[in-house]
Length: 190
Ligand code: AMP
Image 1 (cartoon, helix red, strand yellow):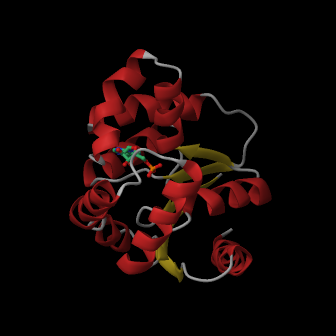
Image 2: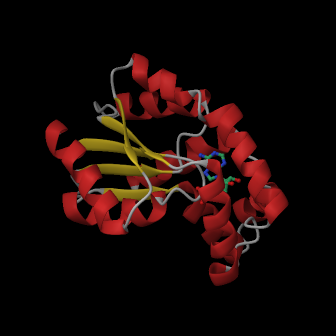
């Protein structure tokens, strides 16, 4: 199995690239953000619990993520691995993921970051706000999400560097150019 974490700040293109990677390598795409948005749309108990947190751009508590992840992973059969998109976002979540994979005799294969500077991210997210109407794409919330990314998620880079699993590509360019750079890195590992 190939268990791939696509890593990067909000607006770095993780969602778009994850779908393409999952298709090419027959991996299950797990986006925790998509799972939360679906639950909010369907007004499930989980959706009600997380709606306010997500609208403020804060992180959902780690305990909730573990449950969601385990369920999502169990829901896929006949795949050659996973693409994790938007997870893990804290060191605790990275440890939880190691445990969940370990229980399945699996491990994280590769962590790849899409590198995009803050200015570009803010421009992209403000543009996305006009087209997709996500409630967490307003200027204040975007700034909060970037701050949280820098404070809580960025430290994961060192965590995975220590495990020898970290790599990065330039996240600025056309969708196809970035996809090719990612595939080149994956093909070296597979
Ligand atoms: P995303 O679509 O990945 O940008 O996620 C949208 C929002 O969902 C985030 O700003 C968080 O509020 C929440 N969220 C998604 N994934 C996680 C996670 N791994 N840990 C905590 N909160 C998350």
